[in-house]
Length: 518
Image (tube, rainbow, N blue to C red):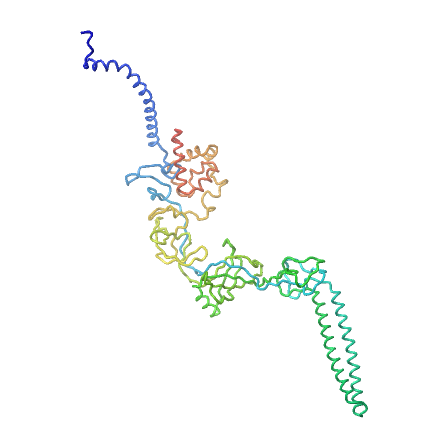
């Protein structure tokens, strides 16, 4: 019996007994690794729960970390967002407003214009010679006929003397021929000389008279050449940079001449407008009604001059479907220069006493163009409007708005229909706290926040009471922001609402991870 192999039943009964000593230690090692992690997870969960119940009240009122989940009042819960996102519509949003008003709106067309001189003249030397003197300063205004330069006149003076001498000589010959003719006529009357001799003397007299005319023309030509040695301004205007220096030999064939003169008083501007405006323009011109034109710098920030349309081109440019116009400007202050590129605003009409709103107030959505109107209870309502011409910062509108109503011009991205708002100054310099030294209020907690980093500043900012947070909503600049260092303040204020929300959430996460309940 002892030599028989063990039965399967006996083997099965003995296997757990033999395997048990080898498996229990491994299980104990695995359990030893898991239990510390479970303990850490439980501690973290407990800390988060305690923090959730004891978090500062300012977190729910727009302070750092206002983007975390919070109970949703009467709608069963939700998330709070800084701005007008889901769950944030009940927050009072700071906005800037302006009033709807009735005013004259100018109907104008904008274009790009090029300034051109009324006249441009290149002053050439009309005779060849050495440039003796230059009698102008570069850039000065000159008048027509004013002397600009002097060419060596001696050769022309000598030529004039020769012509004048020949004239005197031939005049003497002519006078002698006239006396001879008178004698010949007396002798011919007495038949003392042949008639042929009388006829020859008369022909000589006429020949000498022709010579005198040639000599006189030669004198006039020499005198003219001498006058050309004195270079004068052909038109009034501004001289440019000189193109020839003293001692140079100048001639009429010089391409650049001596100097260029541009007539800038008045000055012209050429610009093109769509051909669809041609009927309005021609109607005004035929009625001799002035069409005002304004010249602006390329940035559109500064008006350079005001003039009027002088004429329009005789054809339409088919490639651009535009027609060219020329406007003139007095340009007494020399604000416009030839070949200068400027912005042109052509005034076509004026809408008298029309409803107008700031252009910043007009928004565009699925329902079309609309504005936010602030009601008497400081809630906003959308009003659909039809936009019209724009005159500066104001736009003519048609719609269900009335003069005197307040429309939102800043902060519209955070608004929804019926949202509550609080009106603040549109000028940042006039807002509360903007004039304090260094852009911060002088509070004791501010110094502590400046000494710490961005995370500690955010933590101290979240330590405000609920009343402080409520007063912070009355300003666009939150009070908790003053507890941050100046460089962090500037960075946060430049963020968009979405970027600020993400930054606040990150600060809250850092504070929670550090275990700092404050």
